[in-house]
Image 1 (cartoon, rainbow, N blue to C red):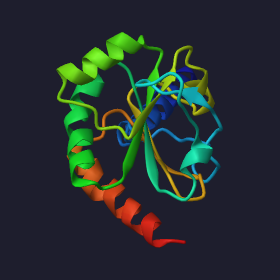
Image 2: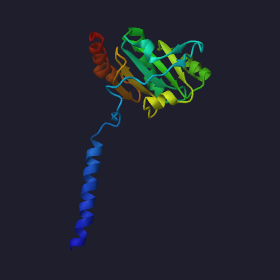
Image 3: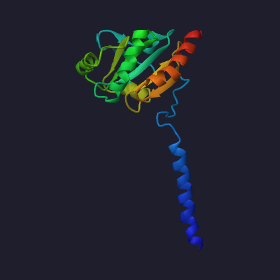
Image 4: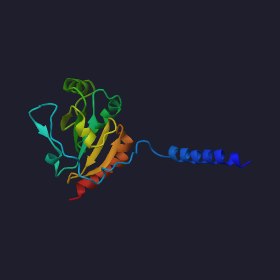
Length: 177
């Protein structure tokens, strides 16, 4: 009789773990980078390889770092939202073109409505993406005036995410010293 309690107990424990897991948001993956300085880099810009960009250049500004690639299907869903943000002038959006070919990236921007980025850093080998803990593209980091990561969006930015979370956070960060 007791031999049935062990499998039943294991089944119940697994059922509880499954039920808890189903209530979690898969877009909210814990990240150790929130509240920490943005990892340093100095990369060439997509439009002019002679020019470079680094987080140090952006201190004193609130900005987004959007990690994207021309081969990224989900980046297509996000691109109209980024274009809208750029047109409205909500803040500066900087791109990190991840493991991509420059001509492919330029062609993709032209094909999908234009370039929403203030500048685009080229991460040919993906090392900067690794430094930022990128799981996949797109991912976006909200960085404050001191260069500290304040929020991370995994997957495409939606209008709901933009209006409900990002814009209020941006407004608050802009008001801070």
